[in-house]
Length: 175
Image (cartoon, rainbow, N blue to C red; front, side):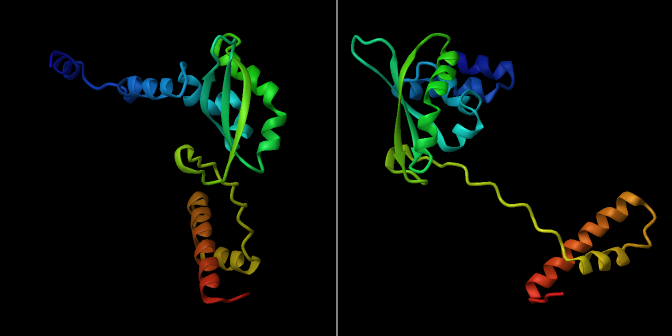
């Protein structure tokens, strides 16, 4: 009770300080003595590997030296991750500060994951929008030609181009 009253008197606290003990407990249940490997995975592994693989578990052998890190990845990405394992092992050990991981194993799953280790991998980036029809652009310029403020005119021209392009798509018109 006294701890709760003391916390209220201190004011606001960072969410990370409130969730730290729970994250540590869950991480230790999976063998992650250092939760930084989970929370900063994209920085440690790099954006390419982090987009297609994530750490699931660290297993320690009885009486053995070093631990085994298990990564979850999709089937098509597994060969790419496999080729980068030595470099990844060095990066993970740099996170720990010593040679903690001696082996890395890969577990493959479907892109949406199975049961307990459901992995939600980021989708491929969306393609850049295609350029609007030149006739739509000239119509938008004609509509906004009387505006003297350059910034406002450019914004209104983009708006008019978007509205006219959307209208053409929904009506099925092809100019």
